[in-house]
Length: 155
Ligand SMILES: [Zn+2]
Ligand SMILES: [Zn+2]
Ligand SMILES: [Zn+2]
Image (cartoon, rainbow, N blue to C red):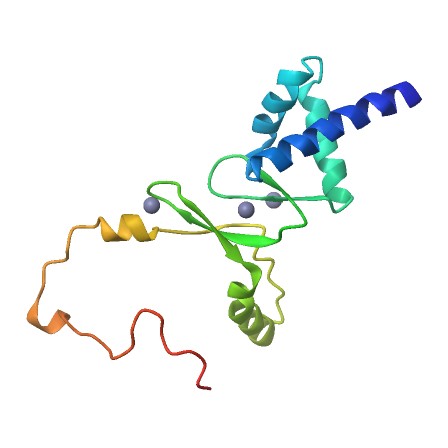
């Protein structure tokens, strides 16, 4: 048991090293590849088990950035994600960006959202900029006085 525990601990340490080195957003398979490069006898099931345990211990969180497998993060850097569906660009969004949504979900539905678990999908600035300009109809060129920054909380 002790020998086994020791081995698991070594695998776990190298798993955490892999996560630190990669600054997060690694799937279990990415992490397994990094760990196995150094420790070829560590089985993928050991990686999965350790990821589960580290998540239970609150060291890691997982997030879903799209259709693929979950990505892992250190729990010490909580943030949400904006993922571009076209180019795959991932923007790390600070948790407070979701504060307004969290407030209204709570207020209207009594629902507590977890903005970290799933990404918000859409199109990144570069992809939006690369869109062909829309055919301009006279009535369509409608601008408000507000810039893209919007007005900052005058309420
Ligand atoms: Zn999940
Ligand atoms: Zn994009
Ligand atoms: Zn992230």
